[in-house]
Length: 229
Ligand SMILES: C[C@@H](N)C(=O)N[C@H](C)C(=O)O
Ligand SMILES: [Zn+2]
Image (tube, protein in one colour):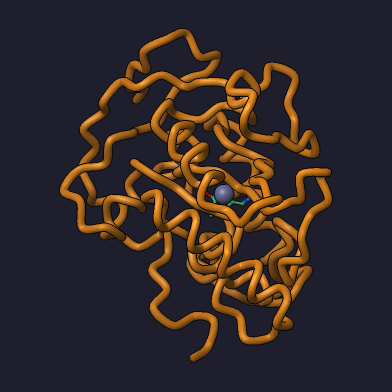
């Protein structure tokens, strides 16, 4: 099986067609849980990156409890304000267009959506997604077969969760992560081993749930989330 098998893109119209029934759950700061490690490499000054919806935080704690003794989750990015997602998506399209001169805009956008969500349906903007890896209790990251966020066109397709091009140690580490995250209700984006979500449109589509629980959220987190347009 190639890395693209059974891949449903975030740009698939069936994902955008999922209705959102916003449950109003607050964004919470994972740094306040005292349980989940947060890596500062993508930290923003207001701390949006360390926030997720409350039930995502609860599930992360549960997922970490599923890990073999001595291992921990290491979260790199959770909530992403819409303007940041727009910048990521535009940057991705620009990099792909540069690497593939002559591609029409639709093909560039589709390829970009393989690695960065279109802002309208973005799981991180809903507070439902986390980019994360595994580390030891001493904070040493485990080999996962590619760096987190290392995607084409600059890097190879080892980022695909099911990649056959990674070694046995990285495969075993990915399987450990997959077990812990799927057992606790998260859904993976198959082109990125590090991207997991719960409650957003992609999660609803992938699990056959009728409605997404989380639509786009605002930040700073001021308690109950009120849907934004
Ligand atoms: C940009 C990358 N870390 C990521 O989060 N990709 C997914 C698909 C997203 O943008 O939601
Ligand atoms: Zn992500």
